Amino acid sequence: MVCLMFFSSTLFFGSSPSKITKASLDFERKKLGPYTKLVRNVNLEKLKNNYLFPEITRRELEHVEKHPNARLISLGTGDTTEPIPELITSEMSNFAHALSTVEGYRGYGLEQGNETLRQAIANTFYGNMRVKSSEVFISDGAQSDISRLQLLLGSGVSIAVQDPTFPAYVDSSVILGQTGHFNEATKKYQNVVYMPCGPKNSFFPDLTMTPRTDVIFFCSPNNPTGYVASRKQLLQLVNFAKNNGSIIIFDSAYAAFIEDGSPRSIYEIPGAREVAIEISSFSKFAGFTGVRLGWTIVPDELLYSNGFPIINDFHRIVTTSFNGASNIAQAGGLACLSSVGLKEIRSVLNYYKENRKILMETLVSLDLTFRAQVSDLVEKSI
Image 1 (cartoon, rainbow, N blue to C red):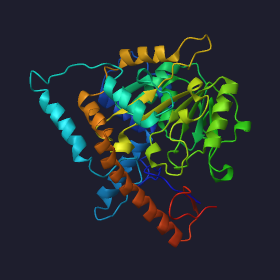
Image 2 (image 1 turned 180 degrees about the horizontal axis):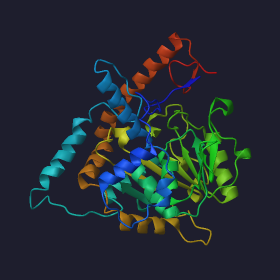
Image 3 (image 1 turned 180 degrees about the vertical axis):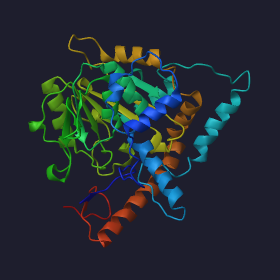
């Protein structure tokens, strides 16, 4: 059974990496010379293998080197391929050029981001969901914000993740010391609750069988399966979090590809402002994978068990660990959210959606079973 993906996959290319033996490690140590007395971070020792997407790239390059005439279609990291509309790049270019003038020079901006851009994000993506500009934190991308949120959460929390899901959730949790040891038999970390999201349960976790955790990482559309949670399912998730006193970290990076009326934001669900943080990005929406721009929403209503506002601590994390997103990137973000910019972006998104349609038609021709959104022109479900 195949479930359609938007961009990401976990296919690996090339041969397996060469085996590292104790003798080879000893040899490398001799070459390195004297050691420091610094003890390695025990949490980093718990990480298994390399981070997924650089490893895919490494194996792909290795394969191409061995087979230079091979034709590869990369299903690795969720990168975009189409040029950014000129209207948007022109705004970034003009802003960058203005930095060489007395009138146009700008230094550090607000750590939380340009107020005009924050308001534009609140208006464009959240409409009547009561998201205020003061609750929007501009960043250099959703993945960076995942790590900043981990700093907010600390090492003492318990987490749940969809299975499968974006690997940064678990890896960043390992680095913070949240996960416990890795179980070689199950290939999972002992303190992580893995919520199966596959064909057997229609790609949504059975919450009646899910134990309580402090934090639930949830991605819709899911990366890598592409499954879009329905309004009813997200209501179940929000109620589950409220009943258990949990916080949802909701990743909506691929929301622009939802076409069937399903929620693009967790804040479309009643009560979500009391239990959810949302992270999102310009990467897939506007092709900003190389520009780096994203945002996180932390509602005022979201409180710790002692009643202290979580937004206050996240603001402190951001001001301590981050000096704000690039002013040039933010100028591009503002251009994206103009009426003309949105029109240009929709045109590019339609190109990717056409690719999805071609893939679906091909799967149908091969008589392969898959899941697709109801609104797609071609559908063959289980």
